[in-house]
Length: 386
Image 1: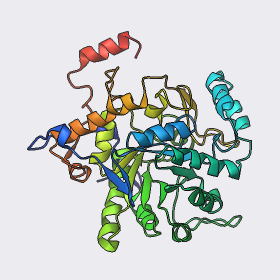
Image 2: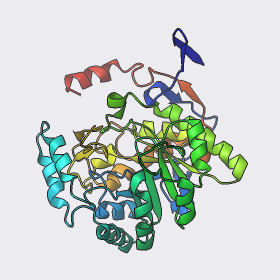
Image 3: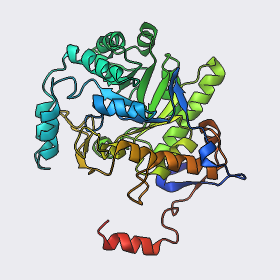
């Protein structure tokens, strides 16, 4: 349904995680008997969780642990892991910088050039652990870094920008051709980020195997405030999932929809899958893991931009190990730990045995879902300063 914003200007209503709820199914299923595995063009994951390609989250040790637990971590090829032989010092400097100086520190640290030799070295470090390796780069460097990544043994190549399209116009530089890129590689390409049906469909037609959905919802991203651009994640995921289904009917090729950002709690993650996601990409929640590279801090990939920073460093603290965040036991009651258990429980309540069945779950518009009847909880949290 479209609403009139003003004379001659109309808009479609869009929804985020806090505005919807899942309807219980007519049957319930034992969570222990639910299968949440997924696949990205043959790269199988026993849990449908990807760790975001952010320097405060993923280093090679984190990627190894994420793989051991059944998920997939994405290493940022434009970050400190490929700019510094030993990035531990600059990661500590970022963590210790005062809030009023951190953006300047980040901009200085990220002026060091990416070293091609470190790209292969980091990939090989992850592969030696036995974990699958996914790497990410910006569109402008994808053609250069893709063959290096593939030769080093990467399993998945991600091309990620604030907003990506299959058609880009510029008179000053050559635009990346996703079709040429996918045809040149033997490993699957994931592209992002995207939030609308038509663009998603055009990107899928280029041969990509996964699509990241989300513009600006991340905890450390300020794109929506700085640029005013973005679509709430429930609507964005649903629209891109519709493109996936139409592309599948037309071509026989299923492209994985990966909701990227904006999920703070287990309930948000469940709603992402019910909206149509095949997997989710998590940043800030994983930044609170003991194994995360940022020492309890999280910052977006656009934060160091020297001209227009679109991110900030946030303090997540450390809540527990990555295994505890994914599988429990939970030490907090806010839904940010035991994410796998929460997803399986939600699927069980909704009567879904697999992720694809869960994508058919009925949803309702329910902006009061978290506050209805919770006055005492609200008063307690206000009293605690939460």
